[in-house]
Length: 378
Image (cartoon, rainbow, N blue to C red; front, side, top):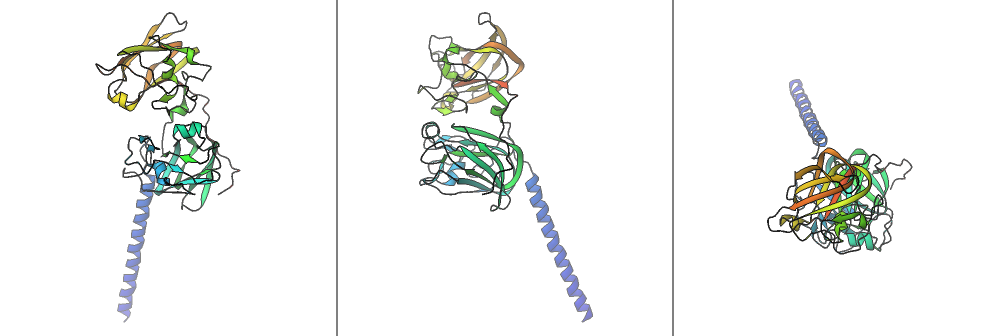
């Protein structure tokens, strides 16, 4: 009897040890998964299979035919425009729209493991953002480790823009991310076409300032001209890509349905007066996706500079890839008031086309979203 009791006791101890060992292994595995860094510049909240994290989506209320999941499918609403190259299938109309109330609404994504969130982007269809006022204005970014109890991270006022980019003051580990919307810009509904969430991202738009943008730094339409006699050269500096997709949050409202510049031949040049000598460290070229695929985008590029607008000197030259969006870091910082960009099209028969060009100067006065300790919980 004594031996039997000892055997039972030992079995119990061994069973407990194995259970403890299993729990410990599971804990270590979960910890390892949580500490494994996700790829940089990748949207971790995207719907569908992408070998990142499993996600669930919910919202305070929803108007049909939209769904919370539609704000994470990688598409802009209605036009079937893909915003994320890794997107799978558009969900319904590709957006989330609140019910009749535009105040105190929220949109939430739950991850299957702890992730680090460093920033996010919010997209709204330009027509609804700029003209209908459906885009969010004042929001609070919240996190949670159980999906129920939330803590406040930042309070932010978004611009009335088709795209808002937010870099958190401090990256945070969490299981759930929730955006609490206090209001919008006067629209009947609150709308989010896409919410992209990032663990790590360079946020080049926040770190660099586009000094050639029409309507910024005192520049207007007449500070941009081209090798042709066309008065449409400013369209290559308006902050939009066809069809009316706003790619710079500081872009002015459009006064023309055409948002690109085309000289009518395979080559041409654009020139901008920056009003003062600027230090440009990179240049970004954007071409509408179909036009880029047809070879209409610039291929061989020469950058010329001048400080008087009369005598120009070659600063650098390079070759672009046949893609819709490409940023070229300059080996030598460009320091000049006048910049001329000479371009040749990629294709042998297609005429040149440029939707937007950004001359990027490193921004030493970047305004980041800041935390507020006085925020109340929701």
